[in-house]
Length: 347
Image (cartoon, rainbow, N blue to C red; front, side, top):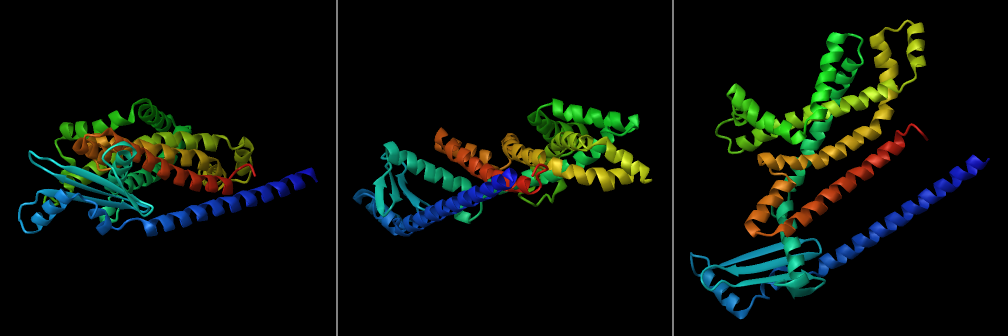
């Protein structure tokens, strides 16, 4: 009876929390919609330029050589506009638009907000309506985890096998990839292997393809990350399999099932539920470790941030990168929490 009332109150609390969460989300969306509707337009932002800058912009319209560089970036509820000239008499003007007002962004809080908007816009690639760095990061992480789970399952089965010719190499593989840094593994696969065997990763693609270098780098990164993830997933799968009660093996043996059928029909299906939480955690870890591909110049979030930092000479650019990673991680953590609750072993 006590258990019944406890579960009843837990359900009510869960429904109440869910309702509050949805109310908060809807309120935030409503506020964002209002702020987005009333933020200054691009034309309004450009009209804020000083009289001197306006004259230079008008002069550029009738000249083939441009003297003024105009940058306009818009991010949902806030936008940013900057004007800059080159030459001996360099002029810089920056403005931030928010809540129907335009503010100077040449110093103080306005400058910080303007830089954050500019850097975030450039990193997300909003001008082309595609999240360049995030797309590569998510693609690499997803493929890596899939490879890791498949390879890890085979390695785990090999490691727990009674055949030493199979178990010893699998154990050595797991020890090697778990015992060496992922960054060094990436360097070995991307730089050392081509030097030893005399090939280039870009040769895997058409020489006329101007993206061949980046595609080759992605393949190298996928191999390095997949091999590394396979070693960690192998330990996850092994632990899950060995956590199943030995009575299951004995019962299957009594029914006349072979070792292979016992593993395929009895042990592994029960192990899957135990693997879900650690494999979800492995995905999150790989999501963050994907930032290491900046070392081979793959255009992920970190590399784009680094390139912007070099051109702008400002380390503030890494703050938007940090927030983007946090948002992506929070999103997948929320999904995986729901998955874990659904497949939880302890309900």
